[in-house]
Image 1 (cartoon, one colour):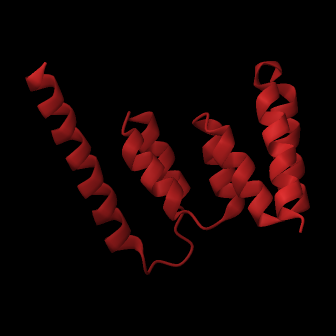
Image 2 (spheres, rainbow, N blue to C red):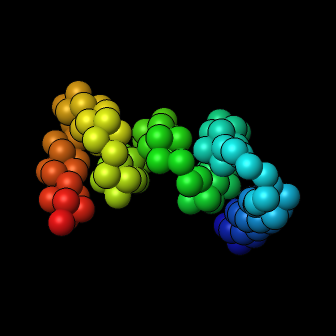
Length: 118
C-alpha cells in the first residue's frame, strides 16, 4: 500500500511538472488551445494535467466543450454563466436538459444564471 501511494505521488508529480512545462513553453503563443492539450491528456489518463490545462484555457467555448467531454458539468455551467454569452449558456443548458440523471445540475445552472445576471 505504501508503494502504491509512492507511485501515485510520483505520477502526480510528473503530471504537475509536465503541465508546468507546457504552460511555460506555450504561455506566449497566440491562439494556443489549452483545451486541446487537456483533451489529449485526459485521453491518456493524465487527469491532473487535463484539469490544469482546463484552468489555463481562456476561450469560453473551448473550456465548456472540454468540461462536457470529461464529464465536469459544474465547470461547464459555471464557465458558460460567467461568460454571459447567450449562445454558450443556451448550449450548456440544452446539453444539461438532455441528461435525465442530472436534474440537480439543472437547478444549479439556473442558480448560476441568476447570480451572474446582476
